[in-house]
Length: 474
Image 1 (cartoon, one colour):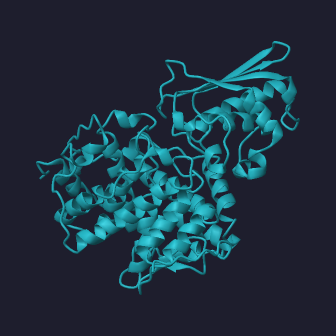
Image 2: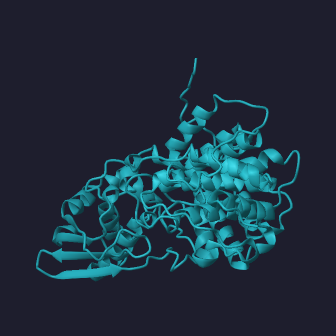
Image 3: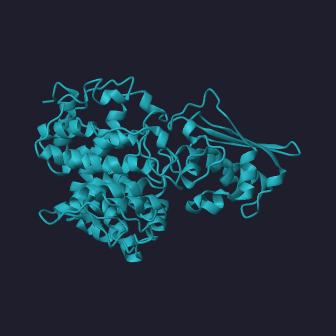
């Protein structure tokens, strides 16, 4: 029997869904998400922001500890392992994106891996257990986002994973810990009081903390609920509850358990080919296409012959950066993506190195770039487009438009390209054996008896000695 409240409805869904309801497509898509998230997290484990978070987290100690991805010499309390690994996942803005807009996997997987790592001494967490909890966490995020039409657009006020990701993390942990419906309610209520982060910190080192905090706080909320801490039993029903984040919050009853339909069955996620804001991927594809009108694939771009570059994109202020001054600003710049793709033909991890950001020829192109916001180009990852037009000094003009980039949920990466991305990311910190071991494990995750094998592979060989700051709370 479904509850009369939306919060009770969600608690019933979290408690009641079982592994037999996971469809083949949900399993396939969620395993792709897990593999990609592990890969970008491993790559991100070498970033400066991740090292700073690890050094901070070392001030906490406990007899129970979890693996920090890519760092064989570090173990942290589960909350802070989830925090550090979540930060690593988003440290380069390389993680998956869903619609309505959020980064779904990075807020859930780190908390589940940290928890399964610590539970392994008492009980085995199977791959199927992990997949079910992961999908419950993804499902909760997707359902909450669909309670607001405002959430369908590129965000303006708060970063969505800091809200729905925190709730999804709590739900996923509640599922892994086999909470009853009453404790599921409490976990959601507690998690709501951890939720929210302003968009003003986009394009800074602080933005990755939104993902790390969502993973950590969801885990912490569930742990507190397991100890009997209580919150508002109607947290999802009220305007002063989760409705505080949305001006048009309209909660709805979920489908009955007997005929439950997963949102991930209905729509895939976008998996990025390069580490930057999702909107820049439309721009990069359009710019790469325009470049082919000017030069061959291996030829240098005749920068001096270009008079003007026009980008027709939706209005999204935090991705409008004419002259980015850091890698984080460059990852959130329509202009940088267009000019880099024009110069090089594509964008890669290396494009965001300082020496590439400040190339004189890139600056020259940026000076020639202007943006337009056509009224029909809505700021939604479902419907936006990008048109790049180049006007040459002799008056010739070339234009290309991208409606769906490769990697979008309408045009997903092939299995081969997804694994190629993972290998490229993971090999920066893992041995070949560990890299291939993770691919094999995730590809057959529903058959894995004990998920501790993932943590063994994820340890890596990296040291955190590159950033030797010390922290004292005394």
